[in-house]
Image (cartoon, rainbow, N blue to C red; front, side):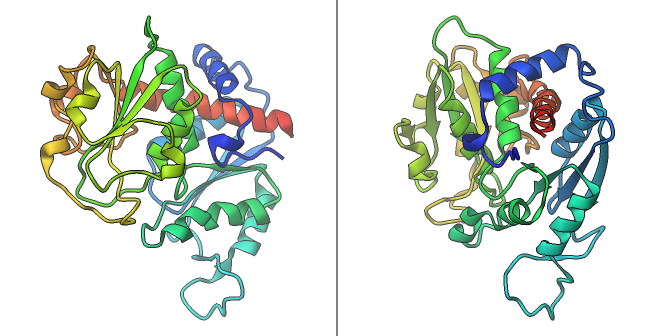
Length: 315
C-alpha cells in the first residue's frame, strides 16, 4: 500500500514531477483510471489551494470526492490510547479511520502542528493514527512537520523556469504576526536536497530549523548577503524550532522588498500562499512579473494528480 507521508518515503519525486508536467498538458489523459473510486478529504484545519487542487486532481482522474471538516461537520476525534472519553471528543480515530475506509479508496488528511510541544508535533499523531487504523492509502495534505504536496508543486515550478547555470535558491524567513508551523520549509528543504541546485537558508537569530534537516546546508543570518546573485527566493515564515512555537520578532526588517530583490539575478519569487501583503512580502514583489506564486498554486493540481495516479496504479 502506497502512502504519501513525507517526500522521504515517496518513491521518485522526479518521476512524479515529470508525470505532473504531462497532466498539465492533458489533464484528462487518465480520466478513466479513478472511475468508481472515491477520495476522502479530511480537514482538521482550513484550506483553500490544498482542498480545491486535490479535489480537482481527483476529478481529473475520474474519482468521486467526499469532503469532511472535522469539528465542523462531524464528531471531534480522540487520538490518545486508553483515554476515558468523558470529554468533548465523541469518536476515537480507531473507529473513524476504519469507517472512512469503508466509504473511500484513498483518504487525504490535513492536521497542522499545535506548536505547543515539539515532541508531540514530531510524532505526527494524527497522520500516523490514520496510517495505522485506515485500511486504505493515506495522503498528507499538510501535517505538523511536512507538506509534501506543496514541495512537489514547488519542484515542478522550479523545473518550468530553467537557469543556464546551477541555480542559487534562497529559502528566506519572513515576518508574520502569528506563530506558523515548519511544515512547508521542512518539505521544501527535503525536495531541494534532490535537485541540482545550491540552497541557502537565511533567517534571524533564534529561527534555525531542525539541525538534522539542515545539516550540510549553508544557513546565514544576513538576509541581504543571502540574496546576492540568487536566482530564486522562496519567502516563508516559521516559528522558532529551538524555542518551539514562539514568535521571537515581528518587525518588518526581514520583509522581502523590491530593494532586497534588486540584489539578486532578477530572481523569481516563490511563496506557498496564503501570504500577508506588506508583512511577509511587499506588493511590488508579489505583483511583479517575476512572482511565481500563482503558477505554484496552479501546479498543485497536477502534482496531486500524479500522486493519486501512482497510488491508484499501485492498488
